[in-house]
Length: 366
Image (cartoon, rainbow, N blue to C red):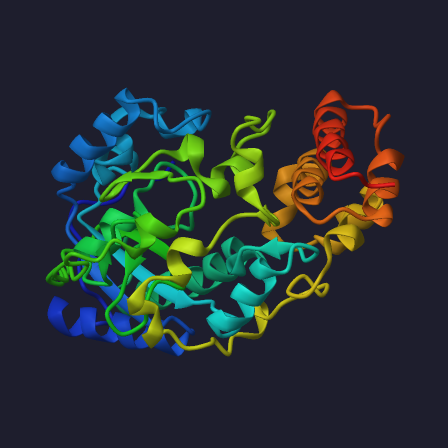
């Protein structure tokens, strides 16, 4: 791992750091980011909150959240020499919220979180941020610029909040007063002493719409999420059995959950993005549960190529779909599809298929 130089000599870019910061933001927008901000690396408050969250066990089985010690909240320990973090956001909303509610309201439809409908955002943002880092190096000469996109122990939301990109809402997502919360975040750790941007005030006020809307009541207090109850955690991060008591609450959500964002009043300012990479692929914005449940493993791998969905694996994909089918209306087609998977080689799938069949037969299905 490269160690950043503590001192940077401006070479071909002979201007002050304030001007450089302005140009970095312009370059970022030219690369497709809607906003770029600069944060200092004092994350003391975030560190204390993260430690309390871990002590309470609210990270579930996400052991990586507890690894690396203070490197997560002390950027200069993760990348020595880091003085500032350049934080960037890129919008991804592929459609208006009404379409999402239509899918959630149709128990035969498969709801996939809006962020996963298109190309894997990790690849898209990482490529753009690397171009931005190269542009910075080209302007100032040799300097430290290390890119992160939801990788390594990087607290992207607290850093984005410090960089003035928005505030962390009661649902623990970042909210921007002009763009809502439908955006991805990425970072460049830098040893350039750029002037940091002022943080944005919190504008959640007395609103608790996100807390009320959470199907599993995973937002246990304002700004506190218990991942163990969160549908996004249960359908993506969690690789084992979904607790029986929570299964009915998942509805038809087979990959992630957007309810807390859909009800946030600030998302009335969100605009559908024009980024081609984030347009829905493989018909995932209108697929039925039976259609997706019929995919073979080879079809799953082929159709999720380049998608964030692939990382959960085929077994978890079938597990999630089985639960959703069990929550749906009784039909001969559903029972037939479930029975075809009843003897699936892996116990994880078999258990959730059996649960779904029991739910269906209780409804006096054929």
